[in-house]
Structure formats: structure tokens, C-alpha cells
Image (cartoon, rainbow, N blue to C red; front, side, top):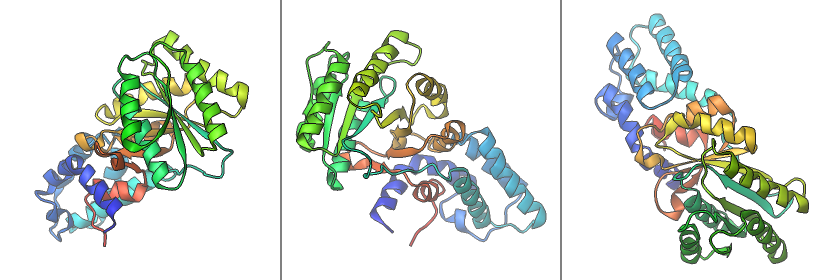
Length: 310
């Protein structure tokens, strides 16, 4: 079993418990015990509790019921196999890697509401890229929140990351511009901009976010190449509307879903992707820097359903 998959398994324990409850234990998921109509109903309830979504749950249950009608001796392990196959099909194309061949520096603008974990995620992203041979620099564009500069400076010091920051209340767009200039002059591969948390319904703050884009585009019209919405996994599929609005007003290219280790709603990735069709680049499965992991469909589904890997 790979170290990465083990992190996925550990991170999705709360969600996996939802499925354990259907069969009684983890081992029963893979047993040769026959299922019955009550088990099928319990599977459906577990899928809803995991926040997989109505349409996705219906597709899984349709396949299970068809298989059961065809073969009433269907076993527990076969249900798990059916669910895995359907989920992987539903998520096809949802995992994406950053193309390091893009024109550099690659600018990633992190957006989202307060409390989603943007600042922490910005630092963890910088750490991840540095550990994988790509040089990074952070831009502290959250100039609205009093403790934002202190937080990102602390992370930068701990993880040995380059940082461009200003004082509280400074023009966020000016910080973004200075950070981009620094990335150019220092030859960095990636610039990560941490922006202020804002509700998607607050027009003035959304305009401030758009200003960052306008100022960067004076340097290069393709900037920022990436705009990633950071979503709190505890909110689950309830975050879909905020994502729609950020996408409409700012233009999103991807998602990062954080705090998934602390929720039983780990299935929300499926419903979010089905609604938005935005790729998921990273997921947060813990507090440590190395707990921000590149998202892959296979690791996600296998961990969510507690499937075993060699």
C-alpha cells in the first residue's frame, strides 16, 4: 500500500464509517455474505449521509438494484465493486495536475469565503510544490483580515517559503502586482496569491477581487492562469451555490477541498464535481503541511469505500 493511499484512507475514516454502518464492519464490506432488500436500503441511506448527492446516489442504486434483480445471491463485496465503478465513472476527468510547462511564473489565485482555509492552504501549496522541485513565492493579498499577515508570515517562516506582504489595509491588487514582479525577478516557477475571504454575495469585496485580476492582466493578459476556489469540506455540497457565484463573477479553473478529515461528508466531492465540472486539484486531509494531497479519483474512491490495495 502506498504512503499516499494510506493518507487518503486515514483522512476519510469518518466518511468510511458511514459505509461500515451498512454492513456492520469493515471486513463485511468484502464478505461473501448475501445481501437482502434491507441492505440495499441501508446502502442508499449511507450514500445520502456521505453527501454524495441525489443524482449520483440514484445512479449507484439503479446499478445495484439491476444487479440484484438479475442475481438475488448478490454479495456484499459485489455491491462495493458496483459502487466503485459508478463513482469512478462519475468522477472521470475530475483530477488534474498543474502543467509545469505553462508560461512561468504560473499564477494561482486562491479565493473563497472566510474560514475555508485559504491562508493555510496557500502555505501548504507552496510547501508541496517546493518539495516536488518547483520554486514558489507567496503573495499575502488578504489585507482585510487583521491576523492574516501574521498567519501567513508564520507559515512562511515555518516552511521556509518566499513571501511578499504589506501592512494591514494595503491595496490587495498592489500586493499581487509586487508579488508577481518578485516572482519574475527571482525566477520562481509558481506564484500563489492568498486573497481575503469574502461572501459571494458581497459586491464590493468581489470587485476588489476582480481588481487583482485587472492589475495582473496589465502585465500579461493570461494572468492569473489559475483561479482555485477553496471549499471547506464540512460544508459539503452546500458550497455549490457559492462556487457558482465565484465562477460567474471571477472565473474559476479548479477547486481545493479542505478539512475532509473532520467530516463524514467526504462524498461531497462527487456532488460538487457533478454540478460544476471543475477539476479538483488538491484535498486537505489534516493539519500538517504534507496533509494537502493531490486529488486522484482512484485513491479517493478506494479510500471512501474502504477498498483494499496491495
